[in-house]
Length: 162
Image (cartoon, rainbow, N blue to C red; front, side):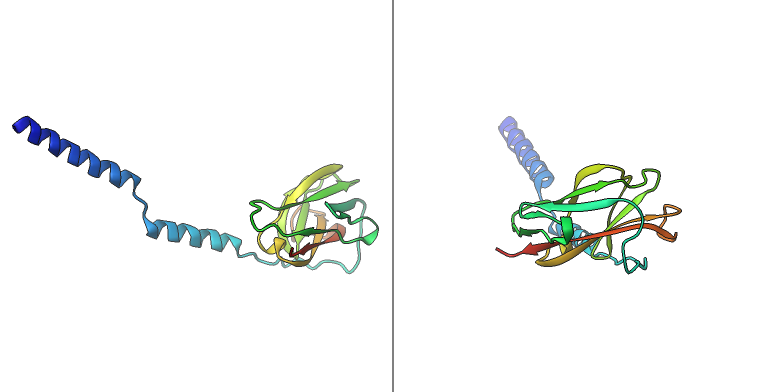
């Protein structure tokens, strides 16, 4: 009888122990989602962009609808279930010795060392909202946002609702 009681007690203790390991703390989940929301808050840059393009280099944005060549504005339809939306990005003839800053809607998207590149730009929630968006590609003389702008190129893309 003692063995049966001991066995039942051990099973009870282990079942509580295992259920505690698998439990989910909704407070932690809430705080984690709040942290993610904070990351989504994007700060516009304080860089003052020139009125017109300057420096050497060219950029093109590409979507299924076409490219930004010749001033065109390519578009893409918004997919609600898309985890990481992105847009095609080509750059060439940039000074590879300089760090290149890529802004979308005046918010820093990425920093890259560009020369002749074919890649894609991952879009944040705001950069994937319906409407027209502007990509600005900038190189500074000292590789910092506080420097003098030596290269400045722009292109636009549009997100449309289905």
